[in-house]
Image (cartoon, rainbow over all chains, first blue to last red; front, side, top):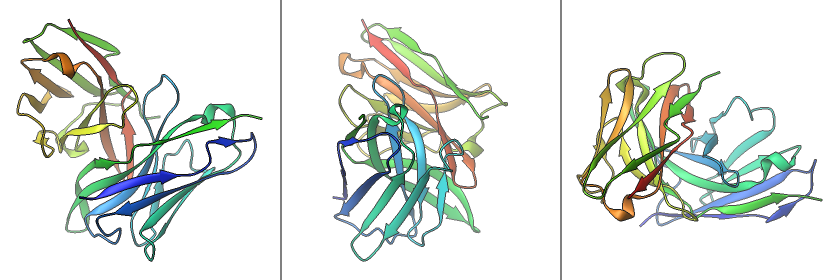
Length: 127
Length: 110
């Protein structure tokens, strides 16, 4: 059974950079049928997609966060990571990593969903 | 800017049927956006319910169904139960690796 687990600091100072890692167990991150994504949820608010990455390293970002977010993948240790720079209090949230199930046909995506989620890790931005 | 719209809240009686919708500020939702639906209870990670408009995720009971109704994606719960009381989110795939979450619907069963 594939599982994802987020890890990282629970508290970060404003203007600093957040680094989170998602460890994938019970399956390979080097899958043709999946992206790997990050989603966050501020306290009392809805879910927001941050970005996703393919095992090849191709990454896609929410346009509103693209200038501050970087997602990377390390297939040798079955992990992918998120770096978010220039933090403010608005970045305080629970951060989830998730597997994105895709189906491809003639090079194009014909199905896309977040099928497995980590439990989430809380991040507070405060001095 | 792409905005995915959902009803902020909805209520349903136990045993009743409710349909939640997922719209797009810039036009109609169609199957080509591969709408998916997620259930989230407080303090828990989201759980996948529906993908590609109407396919149920593994282990999801058949009282949850997805469709396109008019110009929106829809999630219908038939025979609502107390533990269906949750927040429900839709996601639309916009192409080029970009996905957008709706604001969520808080469903009350009473």
